[in-house]
Image 1 (tube, rainbow, N blue to C red):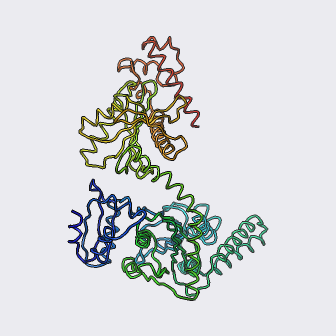
Image 2: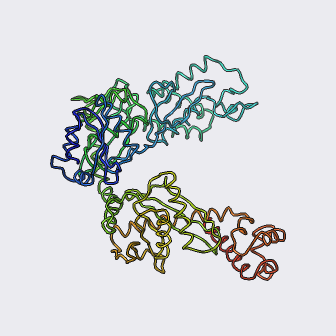
Image 3: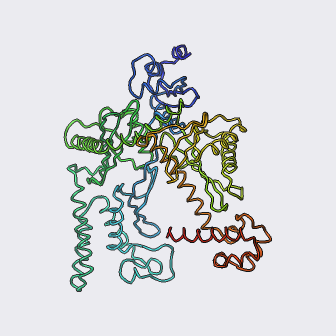
Length: 594
């Protein structure tokens, strides 16, 4: 089937999608010539992770585009839509802080974080500052040296800042526009690279404080001057054109890609950004994707220096800036420095990255082999929690490709009013997968329940009633509450695991994570529990008895301090004993958390 389909692929640009036996997209790529690129996977010798990907492919689809640029955009969008296992995940990068100058209605400086910054925006922003501490310190210093507006709103009378000379009293006073204009020019001049203005202003203030014998303030500003000198001297570069530019270096080794961004603003190297990626197919394609994704979320400089292997034309068109490959001179030295930083970062991180990959993806693949699962991508793990039959809850955590996927974690408050692990498991499994069927959301490849055959059977019975066929295993703990046995839900056999193996530690992490998540939810409910909700969730206390307890005692503390004999006048003695146990344990756990 594939052989015949390959013959029909056109010699046109576009994006292609590789699919596994379940029709899931496992890789998205792009090509100037779809026919040559797609056929190359099946008619040429492939190795490593490309070979592994091809072994899972059972079908492919493609989208023809008008140009290679459109193919690039389509590829990016499809990667974000399908989240394919063999592509780099285009994750949201953190936003860097910027210093923003606001001129109207009153002058103000602040640290801001922006995503999707474009040069057409009229905001006066300066940065990025990868060192957030430096950005905040510079803003604080500007506020001390210049009488800018510092409060929010418009108070009816001036505040302390006015009386100490750090505000012009914008809320009540008439402001000299010429003075405002001069102050604005000085601040913007500094933010654009004129260090002398701020240094002179600091020296002026230091002298004033020294002359008035205010040595403490003079010392503080002297320390600020030293900090500014050190920071600004360290940032200077040899270029003198004051062009805002980034330099992107990279280094590839053993399937890992180290990337280093250097940010130059106003002839100063203000910081850098490092990234370590595990590349699985074409490293340059994936690097191009990463660069495009990065500038969708960060300020776009006037010029970006890159290696000749980078697709400058397409990136330049999509990002709307100049991509340049310098061949000699100071710019080439900066690019070499970025490449060197990328290599150093990669060398320092690669060992840890390999270990992490073995802990996650490697362990996930090993678990798939042990359980004979062809494609183990997603795991749903469940745990139940209750205390003396009250506040019964369940939690579900999700691991995708060996890593926790917290966006999909779910909490369940159980309707049962007693300690019943079997029916609790049935309820939570039904609620989880009935909803998944209705909403057509992703199903797991494996379900892990915290417990033995009883919980496995509850899960299997419920799945069967929903006509679902999903592999189920159980994790049992020993009397020391440590992971002890893995039970196969198909055969009920115990699978022996090496306690020092990565897969054993992987399962332990999953079990610990779902237990932590569920227990925290349980504690939250208990800590928020009012007298009414606690009594509602206590077996043996109905509406009549609840009203009598509330009428007589009024709060949980008085109920806890009451004797069993006193409580037995309203509720049965065994219920009173269990209620007091619960309230005492609740207070003890609250003290531990504090």
